[in-house]
Length: 484
Image 1 (spheres, rainbow, N blue to C red):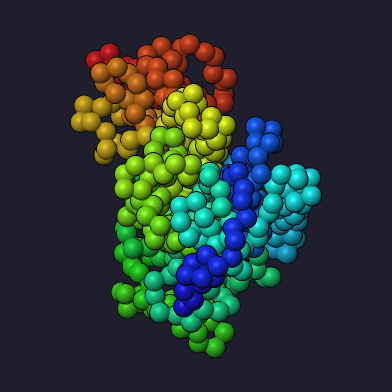
Image 2 (cartoon, helix red, strand yellow; image 1 turned 30 degrees about the vertical axis):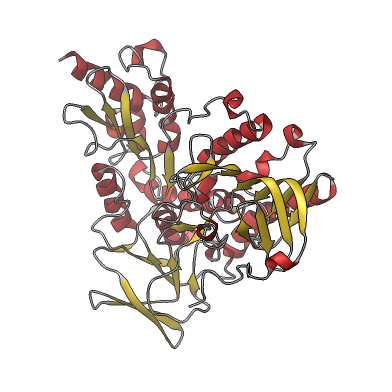
């Protein structure tokens, strides 16, 4: 296996080259790139991005391209479900044109990537773009892979994360993919082994199974999405088992190539032979490639940089002057909307200079929502029923109890809310089913404002018969429980 640190600069010889001076250095062109605007127009900025495609994970290998593949996959799944509504769609009439899909996705994102880099290089004279790996020589000096040294009083670390490698014996080569490479395949494989049970694995299992690939998903635990609320994980696992093969309680020990197939041997002794493998076991922050530990920056156990509420990087428990971090490299939330919010905090503090108090305490605007776009959507925030206080109110309203649910013959979807009995505030919400990512937002708004659910459902009109009525009814059910 290739060393994940390959390409990291050699800092032992970097000091021989005079450093280029900048006002601000930004490492990472994802959410870090959003910092560059009118507020920093008078500053000299070095923008560093060593990704194959400029612009960060979300644009090139994450949220955007994956959801562009999910869209046609969901259309196919809905067509398969139409029989219960009296509509028969013959499976043989559905044709999947993988090259056309792939080119639609990357024809758009690659164009945006190239345009973004050209804009920074050609239209903003205060910005210098470096397309290579860098590492810290000291807290304010970076050394590139080519030996160039860069120095700035203020540095923003927005270097993101990368797919975690497979911890098993195998020979790297064609057919074994991570989430970055699998979307750019030339052809669809006949069969695919997906290793992992989280959001990335769930979304890709949906995509490829809908496209006619024989998908087998293997996970160490007994359920998929095991970090979520138990009932949500149970429901999702049930749906997944109906849609593709799920092997629980197993890990991959080794993968061997046998003729044209990859044969994975599990720790249970079972073997799975497939054309391709997707390793989707999580992501790791890119602090190791930056030499962050060697210059004294504090790290969490999983390798993330430790930051304070101003997004300042800590060393020995104290803020390092002028050094900020945002996104996956420091945040426990590997979510684009969180990274963007953190970028707004960092920008305010860059403009504020040394007087950070004038920027205010840019705390998060409320609980952090997340969504998974798979065979069935999952959206959530806050506490699970297991994490909630013993006296918390937990109610679940089934989609099938509403007119919208009747129209769609929905027997799976459900909205669960967790409410603080003492003041009626929302502690958490867990929705599994169609449009879950949309239905969650009214509950996010209520929780972010800190208001009680008492009177919330009756404070507005809810269109009938729309999917949102499941949220309305869940709120009314919880309010009744509060009155007891």
